[in-house]
Length: 165
Image 1 (cartoon, rainbow, N blue to C red):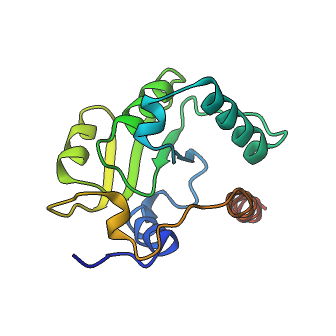
Image 2: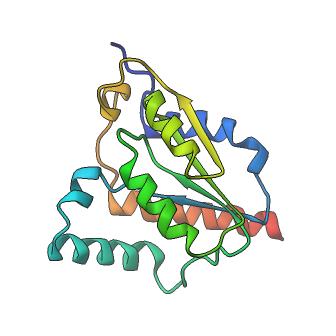
């Protein structure tokens, strides 16, 4: 079975095109969740420390996004079971957003369907059968480094700031 996406950048571009209606809206927040299901299932003190380290590193001194009354788009590079995304949506719902949109480039059809009853909208760019695993659908599914994540977040903030001015 051939890979559908060259890498996460290409998958993100496909997903961005499907989310174009949300572009530039001040009431929209985009959040990514890249924590694999097996990590969630095997949560330990060490994993909690790593998550806290990443949050401090990626967020810096900025406070958490205020999502109350806003449309929040939760993104991931792909879903298998969707359990991590369901947990993220449930935690987010307690913060009272206006809408929760789940957006992924690749997931099995049954996972996308299951999410539809838990969030306001689900955008699954591609839902192949048989699915097997997220990584099979990427030519390059190497881990994203902390520096890459920080660079992408900074570029996103700069683009948002330039749109506001």
